[in-house]
Amino acid sequence: MSLPCARLDAPAPRLRSDSDDLRLHAAPRGFVRAQMAAAINTPLVWHNGRLLHAADVRISPFDQGLTIGLGAFETLVAMGGEPFAFSRHWKRLVHSCGGLDLPLPDRGELAAALRAVAAANGHLDGRLRVTVTPGPGPIGSDRAETPQPTFLVASAPRPEWPAAASVVILDWPRNERSPLAGLKSTSYAENALALSRARRRGGGEAIFPNTRGELCEGTGSNVFLVLEGVLVTPPLSDGCLAGVTRALALELARGLGLTVREESTLVSALRGASEAFLTSTTRDLQPIGKVDDHPLPAAPGPVTTRLLAAWKEMIARGVLDP
Image (cartoon, rainbow, N blue to C red; front, side, top):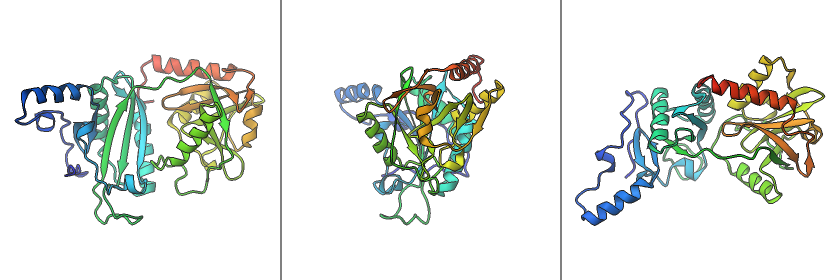
């Protein structure tokens, strides 16, 4: 039986992993010990207002996040147990859910859930994932008349990235006119296939052009390049996601007095850049060392080095919600 959905108009329920959720009823003592030992190694996730072992979460087989890939998500990082840049991620989640006609969890409850999951799993400096789906619906593309949404928060260790990225430019275009453009959607098969192709070619990230052949974005990152001393990144109108780290990098660059332009450029310009870097929530700013089989002149170059120093200084000051 699926768990009841948290009411969005009700007070935030208490996050819990107490005996009501986790206890084992009237079982042989040896079985209880085995189950408790297994539970220690089972991640805890937040599901519709409750903190549960992942193995105990029940998602309907008719959840449209599964059947038609309809959902929104956010990836955050925890710093000392606190979600970094929560307000910016919340704003983007609101945008994505609005574009996909999905309900939103309560903001305060979600913030508490992120902290609780990070603490419960020991991921105080880890990776956090928020997922929203419409819940059960018809088999097909029709939507349920009365949504019973699924809200999930999970965590994992933060990935370790190499000092410099090797990227592969794909010939698959990102459709800047798609209704999903600019939305953080769980419809991620295109990205997964693209990343798999890049891996087979020795790359760590795949770069999409848009339908006009212009530089767009990576599978999970935004792209910056330096052309004739000017820092350039694609505008959102070219189909890229409004990355939280992208926005922070732009603000830092302008604060340093760098010349910055959000403008369209052919994807091939990436190969001719004097330097370039990727931005994402878990990468922060990652220099690009090689594009296809072409090494860039410097990784990091002088512009990237200045931005990395400004980023580290911001983090050192303890700025958690810039």
